[in-house]
Length: 204
Image (cartoon, rainbow, N blue to C red; front, top):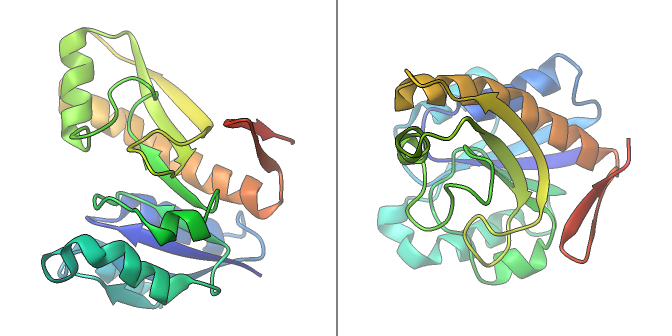
């Protein structure tokens, strides 16, 4: 079995898309071994309980800059892939090196647009709307030592309309996130993703 750990910081709708993919058979031979959250009392934990997924809280108020070390202790040698699904804490240190090209993140823009330090959640969409871009979307990428700087695996685009609010754009992109994340997990689990010279090749 291809073993997955999911990291989440909020409501967990991206986490739910992975649960659904496992339960409906789209993610064949995949199991969610553990959900890790950096905050207690978030709805992602309720989703884990409802679907009998094991969970662990690594509270950022307690662990602070040691979060990555704690995650490494929990996951090293136990999972094949770590999926950041609405995860807001910065990953760093040995976790990145020991899970090289085995940690993925989904970001709500077409990287390299509207990404990097301070660019997360609704802030991304506010910037896209204010700049008047005509296309936005989501990006699944590998996590490296930078912020939103790892090799791009997959992108989905959506139109941005003149009348859009940040919230309307967010909803449109979120629908694509829920398709993109399981698709990338499937490709990786089937050994169809390789990284060469900082670029990703997908063999379908």
